[in-house]
Length: 596
Ligand code: ADP
Ligand code: MG
Image (cartoon, rainbow, N blue to C red; front, side):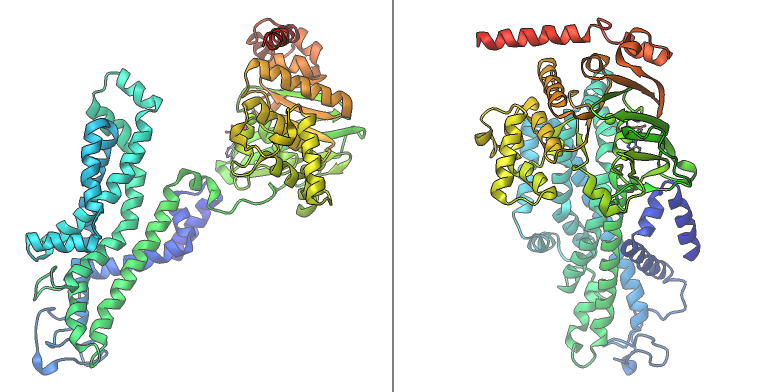
């Protein structure tokens, strides 16, 4: 075990495998350990030197545990409890697992068909499932056994049938969602028939959920089997499973409690270990958890660097020196930012431009230690804001600087604004976080800010929820959030990418206006040279985690040196006419407004 744990720990230093994640989850590892012991003991029962489970010996009845030759004592017929326990566990496990497999198979099939076919097939199948779900399920199982007759196999069928709805409902919901997805349409267009689409495209996508549901229902199935057997409807004498052992021990509950206690403890251990393991498996199969979210995210990005490079240009308000950021660690780490350096002077706007995935966002997030850690690690470099090195600040100080000194505007404010709170409330909250104001004052300031960023009827809009605003208005709220605490630097990470061209022009105009009025320092991230030419004084071009070219915007636009920059510029229609283009759009917009 220590060996496995050691190798697991080693693996975790690289990207954690499913196994190491599972073993890192202490409860799941315990569950796995206990379950392995139980399963091994049950499997080896025929080979172990134990008595015949059905050999009665009335002279030796109800011997207490640890008595001669019977480690767990004997039952009312003088049969060896240990041997019966192991053989009984075998039966319980086999029935539980088979019932789970059966229910998973049938439930998944029904769910897939209902979700994929839709319409009448869906209604018909789901009403059948609803019927099954309308009864308390142990009653339904009793009814089924009553019809089929008592016996182990019938108990198995009953339990499987009762559990079909759990699978069918889950899988139907997933399939409904998948049916509309583009890759399914693509598969259809490629000539696959419905069955092929269903089994080669849909099924692999729902399989993780099937496995998760199986792992979490197995425990229940074992319990339900035991319940039916306890009532005498499952295994028939002389055979025993854990439930029937419990039932038979009932009469000696007070004179010889161990007869019921032994199978009771075994049921407890078995179900507990299966459930703990099931929870662990569920966590591991979730791909988001696999990428390291299972380990709690830290408030501040990990910093592992040997030297702190000095600031080159003391009058720069923001200076990034040789920044390096990795995701993951050890051999399997990928480097997202490879030694990026740039400066932004006070009141200046620097455009950081590059195609998607070139490391712009990671660079920007590193400035305030906002890269998710794990898996992110800042492995080198320094970040100076007004001469102060950010990455060597104590965590609490750095957190205080967020929003107050450096604020962010993100691409889609719908994902950054909380859907359940009004925009005004969220704005006031951001204000109060850094300023000693009472509620009324904070509200007044929030309204003033909303007004400032061009939200009409700010007083009424204060109570609006994010979903009640248009994309442009939401981005204005995002900008108001960033302005809330009068930061020195605003980092705008593709703030106009999610907006249409007219709204984009107005947001850029707003940012320009704010820059003029407040002397705002702006780090503007984009992939669009048209936008850069509109707003930025200087531009830095990023490719694969490196800055390949920097310079005055006009200079770079007119005489791009690096081939990558040339390609980026070539991809923009009307080279160098971004401003004219946007002005044209703005004129169009204004005249449209006039007409309305
Ligand atoms: P962009 O320039 O489009 O903003 P990013 O800075 O977001 O690009 O990403 C840069 C690189 O870092 C990409 O290759 C991306 O795959 C990687 N990356 C970003 N976030 C993570 C993460 N949480 N885990 C692993 N890799 C990441
Ligand atoms: Mg980005």
